[in-house]
Every structure is written in C-alpha cells, then in structure tokens.
Length: 335
Image 1 (cartoon, rainbow, N blue to C red):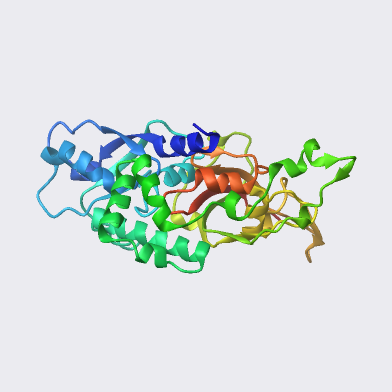
Image 2 (tube, rainbow, N blue to C red):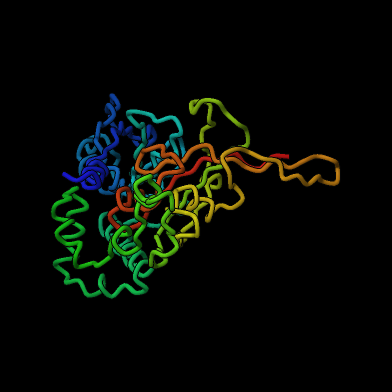
C-alpha cells in the first residue's frame, strides 16, 4: 500500500469513543439508564448515530415527539460539522471517552439549524460537495451529472466508512489531485536537485494556481497556557470564528512548496509567525499591543507541524466532501 493510500485509510478508519448520557430532565424511568457507549467515525455526523442510540434509551423516554440533539458541557453541537472536527475543536485536551449528552426534547432552534435526521445530513454533504467542486473546477457539473444511484452509492460509502466503494466512484467527480495538477516536486529542494553546484530554478516549472476548499475553525482564548489541560472550557459558539474560504497558492520564486503555515497565514494574516510579537506601535496610553499567537493546529486529530507541505495535507487529510477542515487554537491579541 502506498504511503498516501495508507494515510487516507487511517483517516477513514478514525473513530472517537463516545459515552452518551440521557439528559436528566428527560429520564422517565427509575433507575436512570447508564450511558450508551458508541464508536463514532471521525468523518461521520452525530445525527447518523441516532439509529444506534435511540433504541438504547427508548424505555426511559417520556411520551412526545422527538427532536434529537446533542450537547457537550451545555454547548449544543452543530450537527453539520463532522464529528471529528467537533472533537478537535471543543476538546483541547482530548477526552476519551468523549462524554456527550443526548436530548429528545427542547431543540435549541436559536443555536442550531433544523435537522430532519439522515436526509438533512445527506443534503448538507451533497451541497458541500457541490461547493467544493465549484472551488476546485470552477463548476459543479460533474456532481450535478452524477446519476441518482451513483449519488446514493457515494453517500452510502461515506455513511458506512467504505473507502473502497468511495474510491471507485471518485473518477466520476473528476476533482483531480494537487500533486498531479499542481506539480510541486519535493526533490527540487534536495541535494539531488543540485547539479554541478547549480540549483535548479523552480520558477521554470509550469504550474497552475491551486484552489483548495477550506473550512477553518478558530477558537480564541484570552490567556496563555502551558498545558492543554489548562485551556478553559468553551461556553458558547460565540468564542469560535468560522471561515469558509478557499486557499489559493502558486509556487513563488525561491520556494519549493507551499506549507500549511502559508495556508493558515493566508487566511489569518493577523496571526502570522510562530510566536506572539509586539506590533511596535504604541497606543495613546503608552501601552503596546501584542499580536496573537497560533498555539495549536489540528486536522483529523493530528497536531501538525506548520512546515509540512500543504499539498500532502490536502491529498491525505481532506474529508470525503473534499473540504479540508482545520481547527486552530489561538491566543488573542493582548494590550
């Protein structure tokens, strides 16, 4: 198995152990049921677990119409964000099992958009796939032209974590591969690329601009910390900024590849650099403003070094709908 195929396989097999508690206000049995234990696929979505969880709690529920949703420490979980992304974003210090609460009443429509179960999740997935196709190819006709059966098979492969079935359908999407279409040859920066003491001019290589669908989730905290366990708990989604914006890159003169750092700094220029720095400009009261600092970057549960080639990250860690989900923890600017 090639290295990139193995990495993608790990992504598809990635899972998070969940311990699901029924909210105490909805317990209609005595004693209260013990929590349900579920292994949730990272690339999946919480509503897809309901068919496993609901039968477990059915004898403890009060009568009435179900409106199912989950929370983590009181924060309603957005069902359209992949489960692995929610975990990376909300648990700075990974919690295993991840303790969530399930609700069958009182849907928080002021925080969450409506969810009608699997149909809503499927619609969200296909819509994201169309958006990604438009960003990558300039149109989404390949997705639109897929037969109904192929779309169903594609969705089923994602629900079942069936990488082989998904891979067989990929040629119909014609999304391409960054290394194939936007050649960034790693050996250009190696000693082997130097002949007779002369470095090959990378600017002579013909490349196109890559447009990568990215969803960036930025959680900002006010105080620095030494250990992830010291990061304060999140209280509201207002503490998280969300960017749905493509990353565009073209090999620059003297640069052999575009890095993850370059990608993040293109989206968050106010957080450029590894360390917090002073702006050098004094405020009216004589104080100096300290620029923010990126403390942690997670993709698919991996804390990545920022100097890794961005093309590798995209080709190996992208979600099935062709979006790259990046969770970032930052220290906000200080005065």
